[in-house]
Each structure stands twice: as C-alpha cells, then as structure tokens.
Length: 98
Image (cartoon, rainbow, N blue to C red; front, side):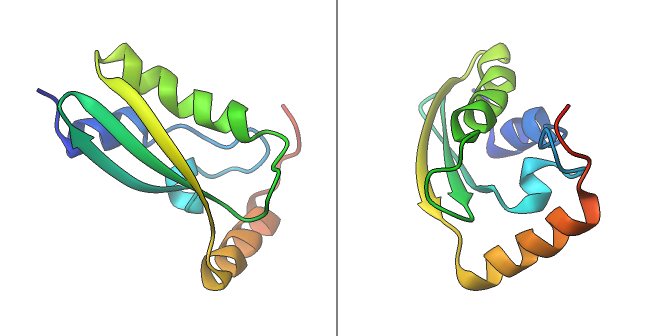
C-alpha cells in the first residue's frame, strides 16, 4: 500500500510546461490523499477554463499510475491569496511553451 509521501515523491518534480516550477510549488496540486490504493488529488486552478487543465491533470496521473496506484481528482479554484502567489511565481518563472 502506497502512502501520501509515496504519491508526493512520485509527483514532486512534475513541472508546469510554461512555468519553471512544479505543479506542487505553484499550488496547482492543492491536496493529496490516499484511500484504498487510490490517490485523490485536488487541483486548484487560478481561473475557470484553463486550456491546458487536462494536460496538467494527466501529467500528474501518469507518475501516480506508474507506481501502481489508481488516480482520482477534483478541481477547485484557487483562493485570491493563492492566485496572487501563483501569478507572482508565473511572472518569475515564465519560460513559455515547450
């Protein structure tokens, strides 16, 4: 049985494709829970209708599933303070599309 720490270790280096930070650092991956060999990931996006939302979700799903854990997720919107933090990090770490 994998633990929350195992899941975090599996996804901690998954980087945003256009920002030089991981999805964990950016606050896009907001929560990680493990229940019955299923990782339940909470994603928080700064705005509605993020064009690459599914790309980001799939980039987290792949390393989780590759360690033999089921993947489930929910999407929320960032709080105003989290959005401000994200925007500062986006500006500082912008690398454009790969």
